Length: 461
Ligand SMILES: [Zn+2]
Image (tube, rainbow, N blue to C red; front, side, top):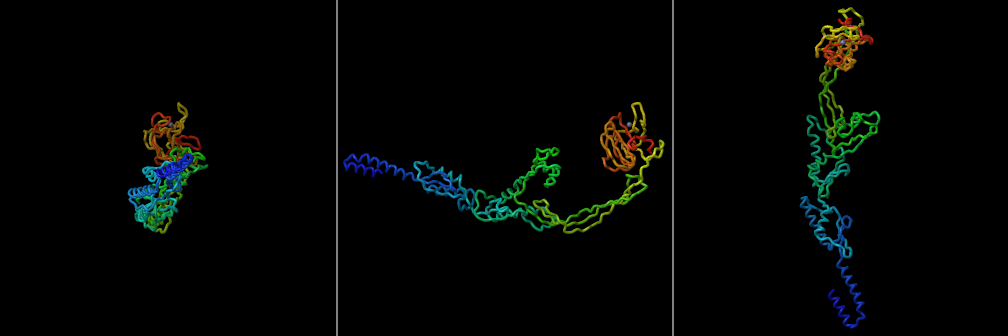
């Protein structure tokens, strides 16, 4: 430009005229602009179609890309083939735009460009989940290990097939170098799994238990998924979380197992008129039989999803238990004291307070002397209809003997039966004590006929 300006000045001098002077200035300004324009020719760094900034030469970009590729190669130990992102330099005509220096350019490339290396992709469910590995062998190693783990502890079972529930494929080709993991890491990722997000809205008639049962969860598993929900206070419309962790790949093992199983024995009852109603006697002791059953079991991640019986061999037949069952009605008859009544004594001991009117009101039973813990026996066979705290009686048992006859045992310290139990005459049902309105340990014993208490003495043997 200095030459040009000199020539121009010479031209003006040679003309010796000042009339060209101002025109000359204008030309000079134009040339100056032209020169500035040519100097500011720059390039946009375009990554995946997005303008990321200006540089002055394409050489700088090539150098930055080569350096970044080299770095990626060293860091991953992999043969980098290309960049994952499309990186271009596009000529622009910006005036006085600020340009990146080499350091800034390197940072830009480092932060925005990923690199590809030859490897293999493990595709689960048509690529819904993709896991990158360094090679096809590594990917195969993952699949082999999954199958190996699933069949490791099967004992005597015969493995018939091992498959994946999901569609699993290996695809070789360029993969992102930064995403390549070792087979061990990929196995970890598969085990860590995904959260299968699922919720349930409580509808009428449901309980925590039925929801757990309907979703193949135990109550404690469901409780763990819903730590803030009180099972007893479930409300209609309440949202229950059924979200649980599932591995990325489910291994389905079909195996044949042979197990020994019990064959439950039946019980046959025979009426016996010489035994009282509610009483029974075992004539032939029953026992369970044994069989060998071969199942074909299909398991997904260790949980049985199908079970079919292939074969069954009986090793020993069960023996039916034969029980003699009393049919004789308990005769309700009032006998004289020390007579041969239908009831046996609930415990031995002295009568410390008789039935009937006494100073503090009517005594509805007899008190039999006892120490706390003395066994108390059923006065006849029957069904336990109460075994619990009952007001002034304290811990109390009532046995229904049928035909309108019941016996009550009060102030107990312990129970050896529960409501619904069938008890036999002389069977221990509890222990004497001092609970309820009682002044010292004793057994209060009542006989109730059609709802009214009677003097027990008249019914005792
Ligand atoms: Zn009493």
